[in-house]
Amino acid sequence: MDIPSAARWLLLAAAAAQFVYAVRALRPALRSRPGKRLDGWLAFADPAVGVPVTLALAWGNLPAFLAGLAALGPLMTCRLLRSFLARRTKPTPA
View 1: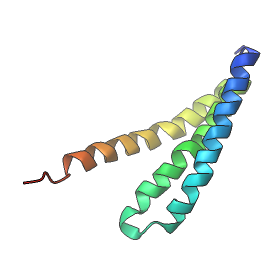
View 2: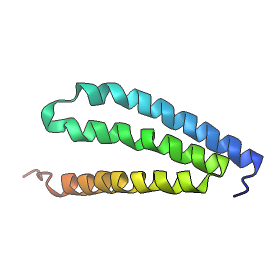
View 3: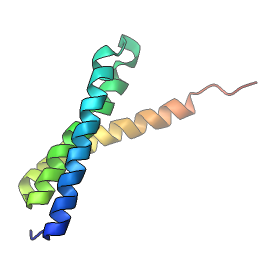
């Protein structure tokens, strides 16, 4: 894959931002209580797995990009399903 240099710099900046988000989400994930443990770790894992995916895309490494997407897909699906289920089971005010 041939990535233009401007797009490469934008992808590197996006990877740096994802890294910052992952570091910020790590402390709440470590402090999470047993009932809320999965949400904290999913909030950490999403940007943490996104960093290598973005870097692989920036450098044009297609096999690493596809392998990262294979890990990122189920993670994002789990977060999406949990958000739908949380909205669905939320009690409505009487």
